[in-house]
Image 1: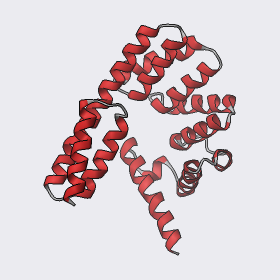
Image 2: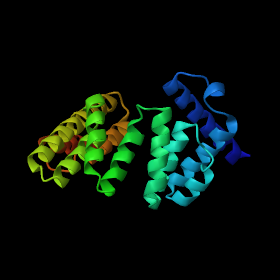
Image 3: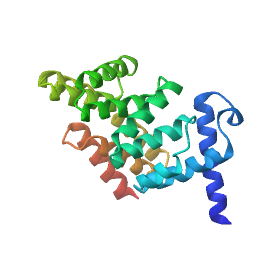
Image 4: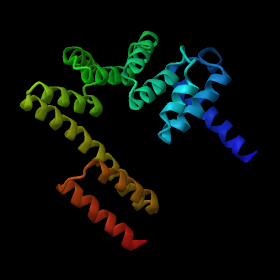
Length: 217
């Protein structure tokens, strides 16, 4: 009974999140069975059981989050043709989906259709110029074409946004520590350090604050 309650709570949470994103009611956007399958497939995906995800969601054709999850599972399982078809299905339903566009571009790159991948990537960057995932992928495409200066510039932009995110976490860690929430402050520092795996003044500041908090506990 306890496990069932947890499962139901997870499904409800997903429904609330998806409703807030789409701006429509759960009743109109999806039904309880679809949500149950989506939550079950999400759990299988988190464990790397991609074939199970594909099987669970094989009949889902109108719920974009489930289709995106299936496309990713198909991609990592190695079924690129099915993944491409599923991504295109998502984009018919939700043309602005960055996730579907990004995976479609990755598939085209693996098929050596660099022009197609580049076209999608440029469109994504025009809409989301600060998305680190897109910037990194754009850098990979530039490197594939021998445009190493362009690739380096794209990675510079990505690192800049990553550093800004890390600084936000560092600021919050300081506030949490001052307010007596040391454990949460350390969690923020751990997340921030993971974003900056190289030796920089910012990294050293994080390490110093982490040591100070740990010694004060």
